[in-house]
Amino acid sequence: MRVFKKSDDYVRLIAGEMLNKETSTQYWNLGKLVEVPIKGYPQLTIGNVINTFRVSCGHVFIPSSMDRQAFETRLMDTILSMEAEMAIQPLTGAHSKDTQWHTNIKIKSSLKQTAGKKEKFASYNVKRRFGKQIGYYEHARFYWSIVNINDIDYEITSNNISSSISQFVGGILYDADDITIHEHNESTFNFGRESLKGFKNIVDANIVIGDFGNPLMIELSENWQNRITDRFRNPIRNIDENNLFHADFATLKFRPVDMANNVETSTEVCSKCRSVLWGDFYAFHRFKKLPVFNDTLYVAMCPLCVHTSTNAIENEYYEVYRTTHPRDVNLMIEYADESDIKKDLYREVLKAYVDTGKGYMLIGDKYASFTKTDDYLYTSMVNDPTLQGRLICESKLVHV
Image (cartoon, rainbow, N blue to C red; front, top):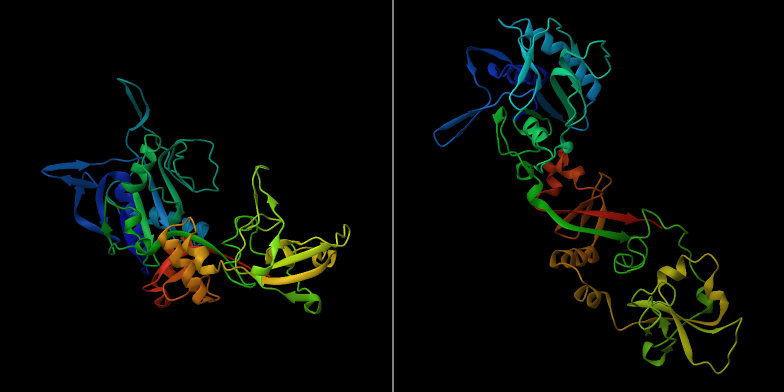
């Protein structure tokens, strides 16, 4: 893969490299014709063996912020102009039409059209065609796929060998945002995720942060963690503090809650969502519709279930208490079935989280989060001074 950094004449640089790939000969270098063309291009030397490649499909990877159609139009005009400067005309010789076990049928055509995405030609045997699908070659002597950088497929399997060769051998990457470790005009056969500057900073952890109460209230709830997107379905509402009392947890006895298997019961979970209780929560006593005056058991409910209920559930009981479980957030983090890096992320969230308004949040002293890590890896954000030295994760901020 040939990598070009940001340059005023980047279209000409890319067009020249495309002509090199099409002819399997290096005629162009940095937008200028070389004095002595180098046949067998590109070349990969392993030991004392020189391997050469001749491809019929290539990929041009561009930043997602670029106007693809405008780029294709400029590229088509430029490559046709540069062709006219060459002593030979690419893609006009005999080319393979069909290959069987022992037969390679070649044909030669005088058709010299270059087709873009929008053009529809009666003949399929155009000289060169531009498109935007990886692994889809159409009927052209050479097919160029123009796609975003984040569409690179790093996995090489038996099902995508041809596509992988066209990406990593016939590929050209326009690194306008300086997101890779490669130099300008560098050719590499080892392009992978490790080639991305920010890859080493990505951590395999994602988190849901709520801006209501404890920021980990949603994340540490087995029920709520995966149920909401970026906002609660029902608005968070306050309850009447005048009818709310405080009680010592040790003095309360809770009604057992049937668990999902309907076999076991627990007094350590919310009676509505079955999430484990911790920190502050609510205890309800004496249900108004079924008043049992000698009932000594309380109904436990987590803050999320209470504050998102639409029917003011606290009004259905004669007594409403707020109490604090001895199991605090630190204990929940310690015993969470999560990796050490995820637990560390939890602790940093408790320090602080700041929505910068630039597409990411700063979490504590160590982390920054994006909705998708691709928004960091494949954009100029990877060079943002504020993010230097921070680990990058994915997050979802849930608003009230």
